[in-house]
Length: 361
Image 1: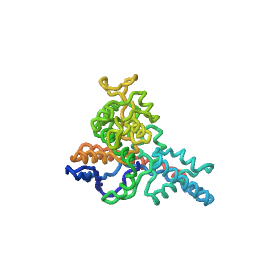
Image 2 (image 1 turned 60 degrees about the horizontal axis):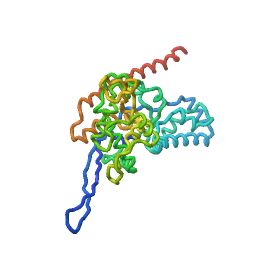
Image 3 (image 1 turned 120 degrees about the vertical axis):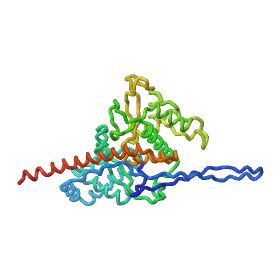
Image 4 (image 1 turned 60 degrees about the vertical axis):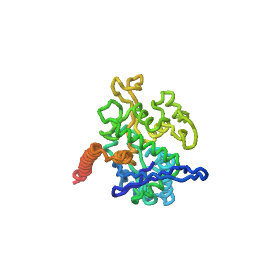
């Protein structure tokens, strides 16, 4: 789910929902459409990090390759990045994708990635990004090697590009809608208190929601969604596409309620959600044998493609209320702390780069 089109200013996108209705005339029963318009503000996503720039020597090595070989490497790498991000929607492992594209050619992976990044940006408007250093430090080591495609096209006020990009078919729209609801519950109903899990999350202010609380809230939105999370056996079935299904099966009815168990698993695998086991006290429901409960939080991909600020405004738009100033202030403070840490790291890197020059004098 590449992030909606970016805009340099805060805009809003309107979605029109059409519902069929019938007149009450005795003989001429006519069907007509009623429209309900929903307007959502577009807010900037959380910061991401550009891919590392190759050294001059590595760039020269790539440029010195046979033109056909060089073009094949950059083309294959660009295609792989695009296919994995948009087709499979899987997280991209930098080492694996570069190794597959380069084949037997060695020592030019960064340079090739820089070229693929430029090509994707020029042709499609996508940027190849890393998790930002502040967020990365609070995540498991596997996220350090992840790459993501971020949509950087500047959209118009009507969100035309975003609508064309994301309104492909009903199933994908249902998944994106569910993801926004889950992210909203996690961020607005979760807690950022000190916790005992393995992950701090996507920043110190990451909010975690237990799966029992999440399912309870989702059930209130749609009564066909189970009010309790699946058992250990049910979770295994969801991973093999044989999990719990919604009740009924009529077109437009409860049969259209998505398989929440399977989709939550999918969102975790795609890095849109984080999942961890935490200790939430003696009274928490759903504890496993080790005394912990499963909890979810916004993942790094959702932070970079959607963003915490967008989630806050999404909730306010749905509820027809003003955005929570406390949550917005919390995001601002976290961003300021992140910028300060980035400046400190940049300063340290400059000192390290200058040291060899001083020794050479």
